[in-house]
Image (tube, rainbow, N blue to C red; front, side, top):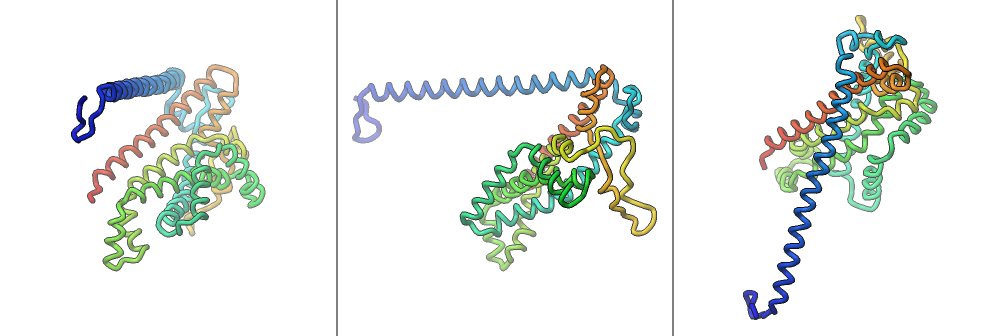
Length: 316
């Protein structure tokens, strides 16, 4: 009987069983690797087919007139000017509301909040809110921002609805970025007499900026493609004018009138064109979808590049 390095002598059947289990694990590992590869290639293939279909139907429709024209009942004259301007202004409102509150909440929960049952309850609910269907945020915004606060069907109401949608994502991204920083960084700052806020501001935030920025970009890339909350609060499907300019020529040179202006967005405009009969309107929807897809993929690519660049600059 073989001896396994000590005084314990085991029968040959034991080693045969061990080898059999090892072969079985290697077989499962190989099968899982191939399954993962097949699923990845299939997913990328489906995405490629969708992009190719959008490109075939809408690429020929994209030109300068399409980008600078208002929607029209004539498909050949219709454009997305009011849609992409509304999307841009929505993202300004969303980012202005979600980023400061989300980052501040993430810092508080990770660095200041006591570790007790109440904190655990809040953390669990934040994680759950990140998976809540977007239509529920639209219903909440309809009752709170549109009717209770009387913001109406405005850019402010739409931007705040999207901010509520992505706020849990920003909070989770901020906390995860702070958790990746070794505790020795905090201890070294405290040992040199720094306060908790000085440690956060001068050490933790600079090291976690890459991760936080990645989470913010991914959150905004989700918000830019959402249509359910905007439809729920009453965003217009056809609008042939632009909101008032945020900057004006006289003092105080900044106007908030645009916040209470009716609006539309690229997903809403696509929904309007898809619901209309006629191949030309379908081509318009495909062109708008292609532009929206390119913007979303560009934002995700920027998040990946930003994360890799931040990782290269971290030395601890």
